[in-house]
Length: 167
Image (cartoon, rainbow, N blue to C red; front, side):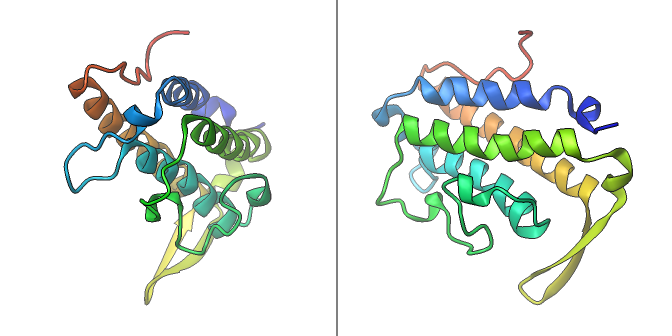
C-alpha cells in the first residue's frame, strides 16, 4: 500500500499553484510583497527547489537531473539570483518536474517507510528527520508559500491560489 491516500489532496494543491503561476505575465511575476521581499517568481522557485532539496538531496531519491535543480545540496537556487528573473514557462516547468518527484514518492513509499530516519547537518547542528516529518515539512512549506503568494496576489488584484476549491 502506498502513502498516496494520506496525501490525497497534495496533487490538487500543486496543480492550483501551477495554474495560477502559469497564467501570470513577467511583470506580475516580478511583484514583491514588500520592498525587501522576494519577487513572486523567486518564491515559486524556492518552493519548487525545496522539493528537490529534501527528496533528492537529503533522502537520496532519484530524479534531480530531470529538474532545473540538479545539485540539490548546493545551497544555491533560482531565488538566490535576483538578477535573473524566471518566466512563467520556466516556473511551470520547475513546478511540474519537481512535482513528478513528489508524485512518484507518493506511489512508491509505504506507511512503514515513513518511520525511517535520515541524518543531516545544518551548519554544525546534527538533525535527524523521519520520512514522515520531511513530507509534513514539505507540505506545510508549500502551503505557507501559497498563502504568502495569495496575499501578495490579492493585494494587487490578481487571482489567488485557492488550494481547497473542489475540482
